[in-house]
Structure formats: structure tokens, C-alpha cells
Image (cartoon, rainbow, N blue to C red):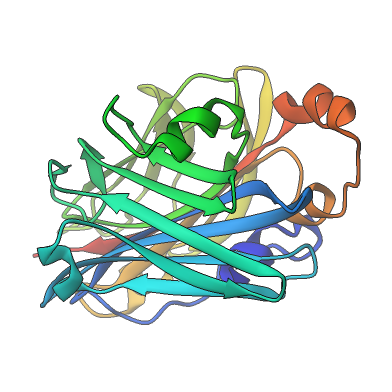
Length: 284
């Protein structure tokens, strides 16, 4: 949550130096949701470690105070289906998950055949994945009223030369394909190229002098701020990590401090932006 908050605060966006952690792989997403009729941020982290896969959920309020958090550890995945309770000051939040038919690719996050739901009493705070007709009636009855929106995502990606990711820079916009290419093998003056849906949006030469920086690009007419830090690629170890950030729309500050009625919230729901943080690791 703190990593997302610092990156989403437009007055102090930084691409920080990152330590190597290639032994683990994780994807973390942040969602603006409502809990007890107040805005909150729910972070969901999927991790892949030596013991298996795990996920963790944390809820923070508008002041970045952690209200509750819980982790479903690898050995609990043997059940593939279950529930867990997180305690709040004025009640409990229940996590319900079913990964019995989940399908995974190379990463730790399931692609389909799963669901994770977050419930506060009869209120559905967040639903991930797909629900079938046989699922918990509490989730089914209120899932359509869940208006949580993903506002940020951080993931590790691994490659030798070409790195790929996906992002929806506006909550009602289309999903865009991002590709980052940097060929340094035997190259005296490496360059960096970023494409959105195969269209070149950024091309940097003399990368040794421009290993950190930022530039505004436009996607569907929307300004998107791109920040990069490839210092470790150029001057670190052979399997160093570079950091890229793509940011559009409102900052976390504006989103969480917005106190509005339901009608006002619906009117502004389609104006939320998105932040994508990529940690790109070079592999041999």
C-alpha cells in the first residue's frame, strides 16, 4: 500500500532503486472500494515462492491506516477453497476463495476458473474472478452492486530483451498492450523503446546518459506520464532490475479524500485513472 500511495501521489512520484528478489514473483493490485459507506483501498497480492502460491489482502482507509490484513499461505492452497476472517474495530471482513479450478500461466496470479470475494456483513466489498451459479448466495446476490475499481498494479516481469504487460489507463477504456524493448548485448550505445499496441510512443538513445527520466505520452487522447529507471540494467549486475511507471488520471490523494454522495460518485466513476508499476528483470 505504501509503495502504491507514494507512486500515486502526483506531487512526489519517484522511481526508486529496487533490490533484487528474482527468487520470488508477485503481482499486486490496488482497488478503490467502499467499506461501511466510506472509501478505502484494497490491495491484493499474489505471490509465487518456493513453497507454492499464496495471496494476501489488506484494507487501508483514506489516511493510509491499515484496517486489517490477512494472508492465505501456500499450504492452505491444498484446500483450494475456503474462507478466512479479518477483524475490524466494528465488525469482521470475511475472505471467501475458490481456486479449485483455477488456471495459472507463468505468473502467480490465476487467469480464470477462480474467485476471491471480500464481504463485510452482507456488503460485497470486492469480487475477483468469475462466479458460477453454485457459489455462495451472499456473493451472488450483491456482486452486481460492487463498484470497486482497480487503480494500480505492480508486477514483476522477466525477459532477455522484450518485456510485455497490459493496462487499462481509464476504468471504462480498452485494455492496451505495452511492450518495452532494450537490447544491450554487444551494443555500445543501447537504446530503449516503448510501444503501446505496437505503436512506438517512446524512443530513447544515449541511454547511458538518460537512464532515469520521465515523459508524457498520449493514449486514446489521455495524457499518461511514463517514468523509467534503468540504472541497474546498465551499471548493475547482469540480471539487474529496471523500474517503469505508467500513470494516468487522478492521484490516490484526490480519490481517497473525495467525500461525495452516491450520485456524485457514480458521475465521477468513469474518471479514475490508473498506475502501472513494472519491475523488469533481465534473465540470461
